Amino acid sequence: MSGQGDDLDGLTGFFFYMFIVHPATAWILRPGRFERKKSIMYAIGFLAALAAIKTGVSMQAKGPNNYKLLGVTRESNPLEIKRAYRKLSVTLHPDKNPSPTASDDFDAVKKAYDVLMDMEFREVYNKFGQDGIDSNKRFDETQFFMELGIFYLTWGMMAYVLTLGKKSGDARQWTFTGLIIMLVIEISIMTSQTNPLPSSLFPTWTEYECIWLLHSLFPAFMNGCRSLGSYLYVDLDKQTRQLLLALQEQNKDILLVLRDVQIGTQAIQANGVSGVGAPRVAVAGNASAAPMVGATATGKIREMQHRLQASNSQVTQAVKDIKIDGNKSSSMGFYVMIIGYIA
Image (cartoon, rainbow, N blue to C red):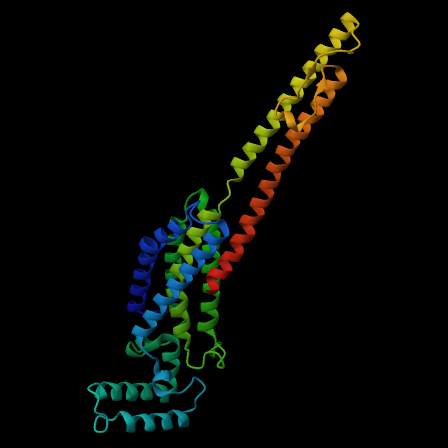
């Protein structure tokens, strides 16, 4: 787990993303500012770039780890480490190095050498970093899971509070999914006897640095989920109400036409009018959408058919919008979560 300095850095990053980055992302995602797809891509790119810059600055401030300092890898044996140290000690020795920081550089190399040559210290350093060496920390399973529970419970409560509300339902799901994935990765890394990171890709990375990176990126991931979740939210209840209103209007049209048919039928029966020479009326609505029909029973039936077709098109479109937006919201949200977490 991280030390107090790393916890403070993570908390600072959380407030940075919450009070600065989140409003900036909301500005990018404001409806009407850009096209929908462009807004999403701009927001993801902005969050990924900012997270990369901030993480890079933090890593630069931490400085190289002992492996990088000596120019060796995690797989290097004591003989290789000793050779690398001797080579560097000759170059960095204050008697031969005119640099004003020669003494500090030499002490750092000597300290790194002492840690990596001691297999017990080396294991502690790999899992807990320099803070673990300074505090003489050892891996204790009970203490590890207790600290793990406190860390993830705290972040889980913060994530829950920040994702309250109807529009944040998907964001809460994505955030907790990312939190669970990070928890599984951390347990797998910290309880493994050997470093599970491939040496070919990460030759000098320690377990401690991997966990630190996950903790550093999580605030960016969580605030990205909040912003994108609100933007991609689809109010299915509202669309359902629109569908019911369309069905209601369709029902009114049907009742209206049936009433006219009934009146026309009664008039024919009463007067014996065959309908020849009856006046012509237009279908309600757009006159160009339907032909002129006679005010006879047959004409009224045709009018009802045209109205039903127009109403059905509205209902069909409303149902289509609900299905498309619902599926788009769930699938798009899932892919955004994965992309944001990997980035």
